[in-house]
Length: 110
Image (cartoon, rainbow, N blue to C red; front, top):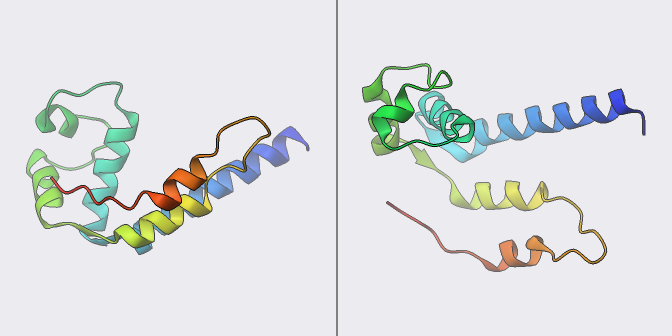
């Protein structure tokens, strides 16, 4: 596969994944929750919500982070289905996380 084609394909897949998270997983406070997600994924470490809210990826004021986590809603079933669809194909000799993810249905709530 051509490297530029592969890169374009991966970039388009990432864009589609992010759009689906925004549209189908986050049901309320989508913008703020998406900022929280970006801040979490881009931070090397973080020690508090206040620190996380200072991330360049979090484009809002600190209280928005708390509001997003308190008032935001997400569809865990939609998230689960999205993650399963985007799991990489299993390589020979590599344990499959697909089987584990399909079994694991624990819902974590803070």
